[in-house]
Image (cartoon, rainbow, N blue to C red; front, side, top):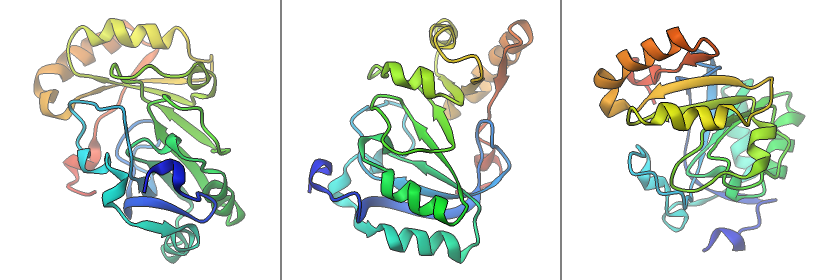
Length: 207
Protein backbone atom coordinates (compact mmCIF):
# COMPACT_ATOMS: atom_id res chain seq x y z
CA UNK A 1 0.00 0.00 0.00
CA UNK A 2 1.34 3.42 -0.95
CA UNK A 3 1.67 5.88 1.91
CA UNK A 4 -0.94 8.19 0.34
CA UNK A 5 -3.55 5.42 0.71
CA UNK A 6 -3.02 4.94 4.43
CA UNK A 7 -5.61 6.30 6.85
CA UNK A 8 -3.16 8.02 9.19
CA UNK A 9 -5.91 8.82 11.66
CA UNK A 10 -6.01 5.08 12.42
CA UNK A 11 -2.65 3.52 11.53
CA UNK A 12 0.87 4.09 10.23
CA UNK A 13 3.52 1.84 8.65
CA UNK A 14 6.01 1.13 11.42
CA UNK A 15 9.48 -0.33 10.90
CA UNK A 16 10.25 -0.51 14.61
CA UNK A 17 9.48 1.00 17.99
CA UNK A 18 11.56 0.77 21.14
CA UNK A 19 12.36 2.44 24.44
CA UNK A 20 15.94 3.64 24.66
CA UNK A 21 18.16 6.66 25.27
CA UNK A 22 18.23 9.46 22.71
CA UNK A 23 21.76 9.39 21.39
CA UNK A 24 22.01 12.51 19.23
CA UNK A 25 21.49 16.24 19.26
CA UNK A 26 19.90 18.48 21.87
CA UNK A 27 18.11 15.73 23.80
CA UNK A 28 21.10 13.36 23.87
CA UNK A 29 21.16 11.25 27.03
CA UNK A 30 17.43 11.50 27.63
CA UNK A 31 15.14 8.47 27.96
CA UNK A 32 13.02 8.30 24.83
CA UNK A 33 10.53 6.03 23.12
CA UNK A 34 11.32 5.86 19.40
CA UNK A 35 8.66 5.33 16.77
CA UNK A 36 10.32 4.70 13.40
CA UNK A 37 7.83 5.23 10.59
CA UNK A 38 8.58 3.41 7.35
CA UNK A 39 8.80 5.20 4.01
CA UNK A 40 11.38 7.61 2.63
CA UNK A 41 12.18 9.06 -0.79
CA UNK A 42 15.20 11.18 0.17
CA UNK A 43 17.79 8.50 -0.60
CA UNK A 44 20.79 9.40 1.59
CA UNK A 45 23.73 7.28 0.46
CA UNK A 46 25.03 6.95 4.04
CA UNK A 47 21.65 6.20 5.65
CA UNK A 48 22.04 3.55 8.37
CA UNK A 49 18.38 2.51 8.23
CA UNK A 50 17.84 1.98 4.49
CA UNK A 51 15.52 -0.88 5.38
CA UNK A 52 13.06 1.82 6.46
CA UNK A 53 12.72 3.28 2.97
CA UNK A 54 10.04 0.93 1.57
CA UNK A 55 6.83 1.38 3.54
CA UNK A 56 5.20 -1.61 1.82
CA UNK A 57 7.45 -4.16 3.54
CA UNK A 58 6.53 -3.00 7.04
CA UNK A 59 3.28 -3.59 8.93
CA UNK A 60 0.55 -1.05 9.47
CA UNK A 61 0.22 -0.52 13.21
CA UNK A 62 -2.81 0.99 14.90
CA UNK A 63 -2.12 4.33 16.57
CA UNK A 64 -3.94 3.05 19.65
CA UNK A 65 -1.38 0.25 19.81
CA UNK A 66 1.49 2.71 19.56
CA UNK A 67 0.07 4.73 22.46
CA UNK A 68 -0.33 1.59 24.56
CA UNK A 69 3.26 0.61 23.87
CA UNK A 70 4.56 4.02 24.92
CA UNK A 71 2.48 3.98 28.10
CA UNK A 72 3.71 0.49 28.97
CA UNK A 73 7.12 2.04 29.63
CA UNK A 74 5.63 5.21 31.16
CA UNK A 75 7.74 7.15 28.65
CA UNK A 76 7.36 10.92 28.81
CA UNK A 77 9.35 11.72 25.65
CA UNK A 78 8.66 10.26 22.20
CA UNK A 79 10.82 10.69 19.11
CA UNK A 80 9.06 10.20 15.78
CA UNK A 81 11.66 9.29 13.19
CA UNK A 82 12.04 7.35 9.98
CA UNK A 83 12.37 6.98 7.15
CA UNK A 84 10.91 10.40 6.56
CA UNK A 85 8.03 10.74 9.01
CA UNK A 86 6.78 14.08 7.66
CA UNK A 87 5.54 12.23 4.57
CA UNK A 88 2.50 11.40 6.68
CA UNK A 89 -0.21 13.35 8.45
CA UNK A 90 0.87 12.90 12.07
CA UNK A 91 -1.98 14.85 13.65
CA UNK A 92 -3.70 11.91 15.33
CA UNK A 93 -0.52 10.27 16.59
CA UNK A 94 0.81 13.51 18.07
CA UNK A 95 -2.52 14.53 19.58
CA UNK A 96 -3.01 11.12 21.21
CA UNK A 97 0.48 11.25 22.70
CA UNK A 98 -0.16 14.72 24.08
CA UNK A 99 -3.37 13.56 25.72
CA UNK A 100 -1.07 11.51 27.94
CA UNK A 101 1.16 14.54 28.63
CA UNK A 102 3.96 13.09 26.51
CA UNK A 103 6.47 15.45 24.89
CA UNK A 104 6.84 14.78 21.17
CA UNK A 105 9.88 15.37 18.96
CA UNK A 106 10.33 14.67 15.26
CA UNK A 107 13.49 14.01 13.29
CA UNK A 108 13.00 15.10 9.68
CA UNK A 109 14.88 16.16 6.59
CA UNK A 110 12.37 19.01 6.22
CA UNK A 111 11.46 17.92 2.69
CA UNK A 112 7.75 17.83 3.51
CA UNK A 113 5.60 20.32 5.35
CA UNK A 114 4.83 18.90 8.75
CA UNK A 115 1.23 18.09 9.64
CA UNK A 116 1.13 17.67 13.40
CA UNK A 117 1.91 19.99 16.32
CA UNK A 118 5.14 18.56 17.76
CA UNK A 119 7.05 20.08 20.65
CA UNK A 120 10.54 19.73 19.17
CA UNK A 121 11.46 19.87 15.48
CA UNK A 122 14.89 18.40 14.69
CA UNK A 123 15.73 19.55 11.17
CA UNK A 124 18.46 17.49 9.49
CA UNK A 125 18.72 18.69 5.87
CA UNK A 126 20.03 16.41 3.16
CA UNK A 127 21.70 17.22 -0.15
CA UNK A 128 19.62 14.64 -1.93
CA UNK A 129 16.30 16.52 -1.65
CA UNK A 130 15.78 20.20 -0.86
CA UNK A 131 13.92 21.16 2.32
CA UNK A 132 10.81 23.30 2.47
CA UNK A 133 11.01 26.89 3.66
CA UNK A 134 8.81 25.86 6.59
CA UNK A 135 11.62 23.71 7.97
CA UNK A 136 13.77 26.77 8.69
CA UNK A 137 10.92 28.47 10.52
CA UNK A 138 9.91 25.47 12.61
CA UNK A 139 13.38 24.13 13.40
CA UNK A 140 14.10 23.80 17.11
CA UNK A 141 17.39 22.17 16.24
CA UNK A 142 19.49 22.12 13.06
CA UNK A 143 21.54 18.92 12.91
CA UNK A 144 23.89 18.68 9.93
CA UNK A 145 25.70 15.42 9.25
CA UNK A 146 29.26 16.06 8.08
CA UNK A 147 30.24 13.49 5.46
CA UNK A 148 32.95 15.50 3.69
CA UNK A 149 34.99 18.62 4.62
CA UNK A 150 33.00 20.61 2.06
CA UNK A 151 29.89 20.04 4.19
CA UNK A 152 30.91 22.77 6.65
CA UNK A 153 30.16 25.46 4.07
CA UNK A 154 26.92 23.68 3.18
CA UNK A 155 25.93 23.63 6.85
CA UNK A 156 26.43 27.38 7.07
CA UNK A 157 23.96 27.97 4.21
CA UNK A 158 21.28 26.34 6.36
CA UNK A 159 22.38 28.03 9.58
CA UNK A 160 21.84 31.39 7.89
CA UNK A 161 18.18 30.57 7.23
CA UNK A 162 16.93 29.01 10.47
CA UNK A 163 15.09 30.99 13.12
CA UNK A 164 17.07 32.74 15.86
CA UNK A 165 16.06 30.24 18.57
CA UNK A 166 17.30 27.20 16.66
CA UNK A 167 20.20 25.27 18.25
CA UNK A 168 22.97 24.34 15.78
CA UNK A 169 24.69 20.94 15.71
CA UNK A 170 27.37 19.34 13.55
CA UNK A 171 27.52 15.55 13.61
CA UNK A 172 30.18 13.34 12.00
CA UNK A 173 28.92 10.58 9.73
CA UNK A 174 29.57 7.43 11.75
CA UNK A 175 31.76 5.55 9.29
CA UNK A 176 34.04 8.57 8.88
CA UNK A 177 34.05 9.75 12.47
CA UNK A 178 37.76 9.12 13.12
CA UNK A 179 38.68 11.32 10.16
CA UNK A 180 36.03 14.02 10.51
CA UNK A 181 35.65 14.52 14.25
CA UNK A 182 38.99 16.36 14.65
CA UNK A 183 37.90 18.72 11.86
CA UNK A 184 34.55 19.29 13.54
CA UNK A 185 36.21 19.98 16.89
CA UNK A 186 38.45 22.61 15.32
CA UNK A 187 35.54 24.11 13.42
CA UNK A 188 33.33 24.44 16.50
CA UNK A 189 36.16 26.02 18.47
CA UNK A 190 36.42 28.64 15.72
CA UNK A 191 32.65 28.94 15.13
CA UNK A 192 31.12 28.92 18.57
CA UNK A 193 27.49 29.13 17.51
CA UNK A 194 27.77 25.42 16.64
CA UNK A 195 27.73 22.45 19.02
CA UNK A 196 28.89 18.88 18.39
CA UNK A 197 26.45 15.99 18.21
CA UNK A 198 27.74 12.42 18.44
CA UNK A 199 25.84 9.19 17.95
CA UNK A 200 26.32 8.25 21.58
CA UNK A 201 23.84 5.37 21.37
CA UNK A 202 26.37 3.56 19.16
CA UNK A 203 29.05 3.99 21.80
CA UNK A 204 26.58 2.67 24.38
CA UNK A 205 25.65 -0.19 22.02
CA UNK A 206 21.95 0.42 22.35
CA UNK A 207 19.28 0.96 19.65
